[in-house]
Length: 146
Image (cartoon, rainbow, N blue to C red; front, side):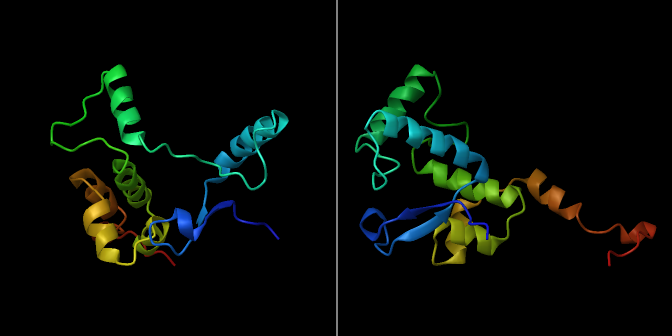
């Protein structure tokens, strides 16, 4: 039986304090395995070690990197690039790739679908237009899908 690649968040390390099991993209698995193998060879990894250690100053590090990369902190619409913006990107990419709202809500670990859809998913007119193109061309006699 094939197991879905995933990571486990302990309750103490998670905002809602319930813990969570999160799927990860299968393409990431070999890189994570190699990274853990490399750390094990140097004695810096154990099976119970946290995969990611998030520095308390992550926002400061990101801001420094933005300056170094000559990337503006705010865009022309006055949106801010910060660590939390990655969650907006995650939800938006799922929506743009056609994930159902329920899948996106689950991936975001939101209890309310309105938060997922109205706050975190950002679609543009072109995205909606692409969705409209999915409707069969009934005006020109395109057969219905069976």
